[in-house]
Image (cartoon, rainbow, N blue to C red; front, side, top):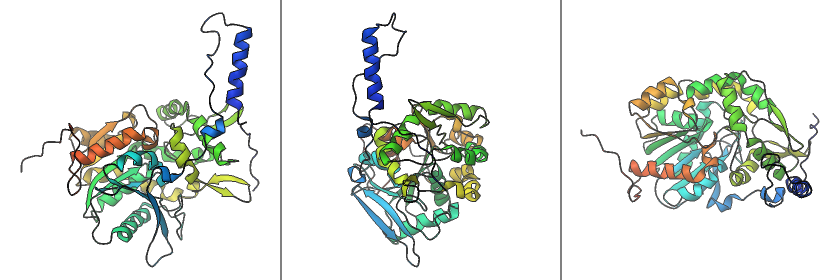
Amino acid sequence: MESSNLTSLPEETLDVEDEQQQQENQKNPPVSAFSSVPTRPPTKSSLKKYVPLEWTEFFDKEEDVCIPDSDDVFHVYMAGTEGPVVFCLHGGGYSGLSFALSTSKIKEKARVVAMDLRGHGKTSTENELDLSVETLCNDVFAVLKAMYGDSPPAIVLVGHSMGGSVAVHVAAKKALPSLAGLVVVDVVEGTAMASLAHMQKLLSSRMQHFSTMEKAIIDYHIVSFGSRRDCDFLWNFGGESPIFTRNYRGVQCFNPIEWSVRGGSLRNIDSARVSVPATLKYDDSKKCFVYRTRLEETEQYWRGWYEGLSDKFLSCPIPKLLLLAGTDRLDRSLTIGQMQGKFQMVVIRHTGHAIQEDVPDEFATLIINFISRNRIGPHGIVIPGLRRPVQPQQ
């Protein structure tokens, strides 16, 4: 299959246009403040702004965890030296590096482990396409067993999107005695199930090939502007709107409505620079970069990720935190559960679906505060001025 023709983005496109606009304004001054688009000050070359960042800037080390009696090898990134373990599970199509920027702050108070799930990142397994929730749960248990043996430390499971579903299922099994907390990031059963009918169409609408890694990061970032509005449009009309395409300064961009596919477009340039490369691989036959994870071939497992998720989440007998990018994502079961005080909920309105990437510092603060409030770990985390919840009398 031949690769599709790609429209390239010149390195200095944005800056050249700014210079031309500035010269035009000098020759023909605008009549009013509203008659032309304001110019911006000179900026760095586009490609320089999008050069990939190394994982070593955020994590302390990486390891390949070999699972006994199998050929499965799971790649994990680790940071921090003390405190409970914040064990991070990424969304479909992402990698452990989705938590890179937030790790920089979390590791000051706790340890962080972010694994590449089956079929993602640098992980290598016998069956890359088996993304059933049961298999993914078994993978998590196997990695924890290989890393910590029979005496794991206090663990806080943090899962984003598909990874949030896996985290809930792991917690619901009650097979991890040291599990002390559960954080689910922007995944709700009702809205997730409603999106499944449109997922294949959304996957096929994505730009499929990238000539260089820098261009891939540029494309990811450019299409993120305005995507939240388009996501809301699709959301409000029940997913019946057409798949949008639009041209942005000569580049054909596909609308990445990725809250239901990859987990949302990235608004943070630095996060994209470290996380996007791990989601792609180089295809020698096509001479370009393509997606590492073949999500479109895993459709048989999608319903299993989300069916019964709300009830499983509410049934977990540990402190729970639900982070959402909007209240429109809350379904009936969770609304009732939240009113009954069964879990803590925080809505972050100024972000997209990938909360941990869009606002990493705020995300890290929420995780640290959650650990502190619930006294997780052998000594807990002390944050001056932070009020702890009143413990009910027995």
